[in-house]
Image (cartoon, rainbow, N blue to C red; front, side, top):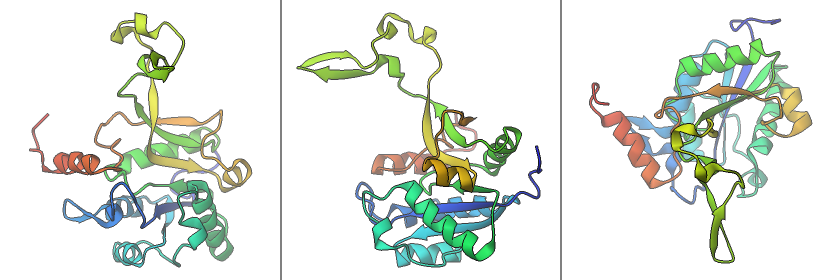
Length: 239
C-alpha cells in the first residue's frame, strides 16, 4: 500500500438527474427530515479521504438543495448528459475531467448514488481500505441476492424454463451457493482505469459486501420510498 487512508485524495461524485420517470422528484423528496440527496452528501462530507463532494445535476432545484447541504455544484449538467441514454460513466467522466482540470489529479473517483440514503461512513471507509489494500483495483458495493439466480425463470414459446441451465431447481434453498447483486450504493475506481475501461466493473473488481438490508436499499419506486420511510420510523428496538 503506497498511501494510507488519511492522505489519499478521492473525489466523490453524486449524479442526480431531475427527470426520474418512476418516482418524480425523488432526489429532493423529503426522507425523514431532509431531502433524499442530502443523506449522501452529508455522509460523504464526513469522510476525511474525500477531498470534495461534487453533485452533477440538470436541475436548478436539485443544485440549490445540494449546495445548501454543502456539496459543490459548479455547473448545470449539459443536456446531452441528461437523457435516458446517458450513462453513469459518461456523467462521472464529465465531472472528473472538469474537476481535475481545475484542481489537479485525484487518486480515486467515487460514485455515490443519491438513491442509497442509508450507506454509512463505516461502509465507505471500509471500501476505501479495500481500494488501497488491493493496489487500487475497482471496488463495488454488493449485497446478498434476495432471489437466487439459479431459481430464476424465463419464458420461451409459452413455456417457463430455468434461466440458468443447471441443477438449481433440484437443490434445497439452503444448499444453493451464495449469490450477490450490485446494490448501487458504492463504486470506487482510479481516474485512469475509468477512462481506459469506461466501466466501473472489471474482471478483477473487489467486492465490498454490504449485508445490512437498510444500507442496500436503492430507491427507484414509490414502494422503495415507503420501505425507506419505514426504516426511519421503526422503533429503535424493533427487529
